[in-house]
Image (cartoon, rainbow, N blue to C red; front, side, top):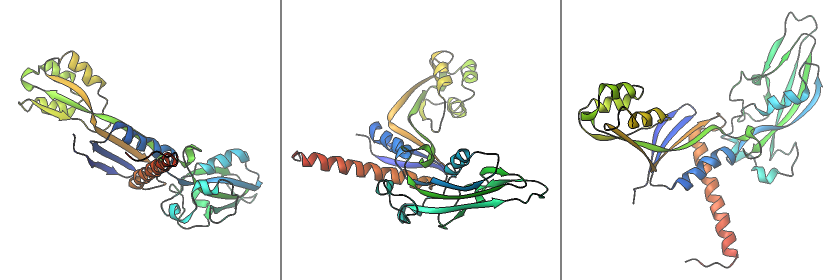
Amino acid sequence: MVERSVRVREVRGSRLELVIRGFSVAYVNAIRRLILSDVPTMAVDFAYFYENTTDVYDEMIAHRLGLVVLKSDEALAKYAPPEACRDSEPPNPKCFVEIFLNVSLDDDAPTGFYVKASELKIGDPDVTPVYPDTPITYIAPGQRLHIVAYARLGRGKEHAKWSPASLSILKYTPIVSYDPSKATEECLKCVSAYKDVVKALKEGRPGVLELYGLVNTGGLRYCAETACRDAISIRYDPSILQLVVEGTGALRVERIVYEAIKVLEDKIKTLRGAIMMLGVKRG
């Protein structure tokens, strides 16, 4: 049995790479899917237009407001979950945070300007735009825009605007077995795009190399079947999984994975309870 372990290979900004050993593909893939579909974040869900004389329709501005990424780390504890707010409407403070946008320009203004997310006045200081320079619309001289909007917690399975990650990938780890004594110049030239493999083939001793990161191994497989037929071979190990997550910034990327695991545990508890109600005894 493979020993279970989780290693953080890289954390850079909103990107996280994990190397996961000994866990089933089904379990880790469930986490990958829940990252995209079930981890809640804040996003605008209601927008009431009191005045809009810009050149952009209400519906388009409302859509852009919904796609403004809002910081949600503190909101997860402060606001009710999406299920509890399903039948609720603004301005219920347990479910919604109020957002104001009121901008205008005089007729004699020399030029217009872009209204950005930084112009939003949000009723909760813990819920702020992650990217303040996100453009919402353009205000020309003599135009006015007055909106009251409400954001709530939601899940990616409702709408992509609530998904905390833009990327969630699970892959097997490529394992390269190599024998430098059989590597020809033609082989080294073929695998030149794979620096780690080239380095291993020049070391002089046979060995095994694990490749990490989002490496496209299509070219390496081609080389293994042609110029490097005797020098390298490649296989994919399902017991060593790589999970790569890139967050939108709504939640810290480590928090995204943690919340996904919590969601999976809750689903398992719910299923277990339903089965127990059927009278199924523990084995």
